[in-house]
Length: 99
Length: 161
Image (tube, rainbow over all chains, first blue to last red):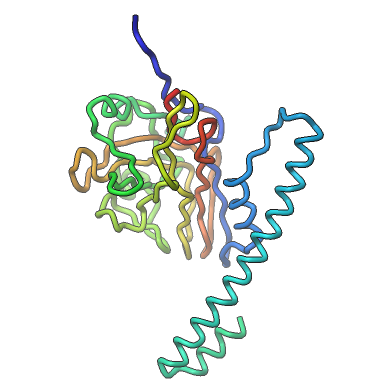
C-alpha cells in the first residue's frame, strides 16, 4: 500500500493576482479591499441568502478597515511632522502636514 | 519563448523529501521573488532561478532589485503569512504575505519564487514555483503588488492534501 499526496498548481488559472498603480501609491480603499479578502472568503456556491449577507458584511468591513487606515495615515503624519520639526525643518514639516 | 502557466517545480517536490526547504515563519529559510518579462520561459522542469537582463529579469526599479539572492534582508524577500505552515483537516499548507514593490516602474509577465537559503545555505536560488500573471502587468512610478492567495487549506500557494 502506498500513500500519494498532490502538490501542484493549476497551470492555467490565476494563482496570484497583480495590482499596480501609476504615479501614486495604493489608496486606503484599495488596500482595505485586499485586506478584507484575506480575512473573509465567500463561496460562490454558498446558499444565496447566506452569500448575500456575507458579501454585505464584506463590504461593510472594507469601509471600516479603510476608515482606520486613514486614521493611521493621519496619525503617522503627526508623528512625522513632529520628528521633522524637531530636526529643525519646520517648513518641510508643514508641507507634509498639508498632504 | 513565453510564460505558459503556473508550475510547482519538480525539483522543489524532490527537495521537500530531502528536507531542503523550511517554511517556518520564524527561523525558517528566506524565500525571494524574481520578476520576468514575457520573453522568459519557465516550466516545472525549472530547477533554479536565473537573473539579470540576459535572463529576462526586469530591471531594478524602486524597491525591486535585480540580480538574485542577496541575503535575507533583500527587498525581494517574501514574508511568510502569519503562523505558517499550518493545517486544516487533512491538508497542510503554507503561504506568503502579499509583496509590494514601491516607487517602481516595472512591466512583468510572471515570477519565480526561490529559496535563497536552501539547505541552510546562502545565496541559493532553488526554484519553488513558477507564477504566470496571465498578461503583462505594469506600474509606472507606483506600486507593483503581488497578491498572494488566502492562507487556507483551499487557496494557499503550497498545499499538501
